[in-house]
Amino acid sequence: MYPVLFKIPLFGGITIHTYGVLVATGFVLGISWAVHESKRLGQDPAKMLDLVFYLLIAAIVGSRVFHVFISQRTEFFQNPLILFQVWRGGLVFYGGLICCLLVAVWFIRRHKMKLLITLDIFAPAISIGHAVGRIGCLMAGCCYGREASHGAWYSLTFPGVVDSFAPGGTPLFPTQLMEVTGELIILSILMIVRRFKRFDGQLMATYLMLYAVLRYFNEFFRGDFERGFVIDPWLSTSQSLSILLFAVGLFMYIKLWKRGCEVK
Image (tube, rainbow, N blue to C red; front, side, top):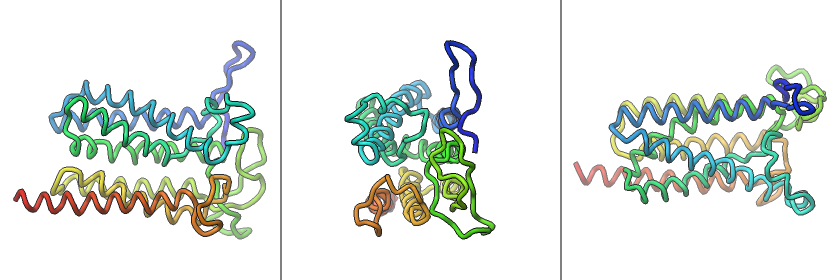
């Protein structure tokens, strides 16, 4: 765990948080993939970069607003400026994903891009960016796990340091690393699907279903309960969204599969 990467001794001290650097790195890697893939598939890289600009804003705004709405509503009314304190953590992936999907559909339709091909381009990019971003969560101590058995080989213990969200000195399930591993597995599966793709939209539909399953089960090991529950303590907010996301992905997969069969 390493919440502060370094400090710049200017203007009274500027703190560079590891979380922010890694989230930014994830964005850059995801963008690089999207541009590379758009060229491979004959799509306009310039339009893709324009879309990325809107998605970057949508991801930050959606993930931050969702977090504040779920976990910091009282604090927000006392100090609205916390909405902008993204460098300290507090970005909910589902909020960013939902906002990005809505903005992407709007932008793609408006600029007459190929919707399903564009979504397929971004599916692996999401996994890449998210995996790197979760390492940022590990460094910040956010999205931490439930208490694990003392001495368990799989447990992770955070030191009690300033700027950490996780409780110090307590063995916890390494939920951040669990999700990083899951995202890398999803990315590997997407690369296989990409090679043998049968219809446009297959990668995004596959991603939605696989991530929904990953997040649903990872939630059982999470210990940051402030993210909220729909049915306390059995169904968290993220698990309910996972069920909805899986249903959307499954519907999308079946519908597009049938359409592909009809065309053939």
